[in-house]
Image (cartoon, rainbow over all chains, first blue to last red; front, side, top):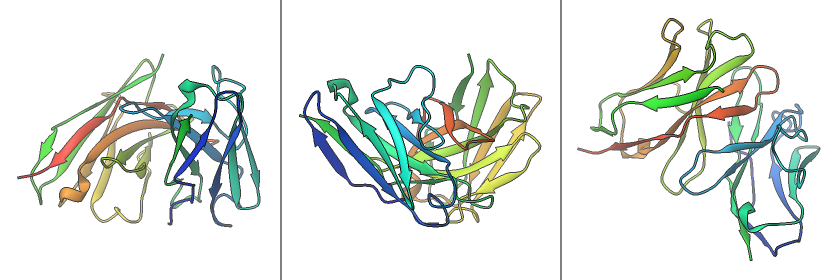
Length: 111
Length: 120
């Protein structure tokens, strides 16, 4: 099972919006609305930010939103803040035999 | 509040077996709503899913690691474990345990992670 494809890095200024893409295939992202997104600060465990493509867990800022079109999922962060600087990983369900596949990760820099 | 805690040796010799345990507190590992899994992260690299287990004992492994991985569950101790055999330096990583939702596949609770170094 190949990893999902994410850009290595994105950047934005405080207050701006950025979008991180996550491209999979018809066997994972394209077949299931089960994409999740994780935020990871250096030295910390990942934190769930989005599940089922667009739902936010309790406590996650509404500045974070998710969407999907075809085989590509996207994470948008609006009103960028310094604390958003972190690595972001997408993850998709990929069927019962290999249920989890991660993207390679995207480093977000807040300028 | 559910918490997960990894434990095990921080140093393993090449060709030996890496063994880690994840202890679940504040909730039951026997819940039908969750899988329990392992994810690793080599230094400076991304996340890699290793595998998951259901409380019934059903297991799911990353095909790239399947021949070397065993995940087991001990419901009496509220723990699940990882064994990775024939390790090499490439298995050096931070190993995380996590809870995965049965219905939406998201991983909503993670352990803090434990660093395992493979070196002689």
